[in-house]
Amino acid sequence: MYSILQAAHSGTRWLVLVGVALTLVYGLILWFSKKPLNSNGKKLALFTMIFSHLQLVMGLILYFISPKVQLGNMAATMKDATLRFYAVEHITIMILAIVAITVGYSWSKRLMNTLKGSRILAIFMLIGFILLMLGIPW
Image (cartoon, rainbow, N blue to C red):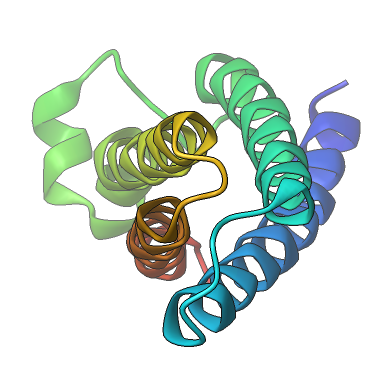
């Protein structure tokens, strides 16, 4: 089960990255061309949020069954860079990225048909994209 879930988590990462990148570019295009957020942007952001939440669920399951996360001896985990990355840094950065994506979608959805909605979507997707790039174990 672990290897299947790990492969799915690794593969879904590309859907999330592509979704965030497309939503970011779309939001920037709308914002800089001074066009309001439309239903296409809202749908793109929604699918991005759905894939990121799916990724989060798989990641949380992996967090508790992965041999890369050793929570029993945190002193030893914190001394090992690889173990610390998976036990602390990866999960923290990814949760912050998903929060940014979710806030960006939710806030911009309330500002549909406004220029502010385009700006909010672009800003929060940029934050999410940067955090994702920092947190992915390349």
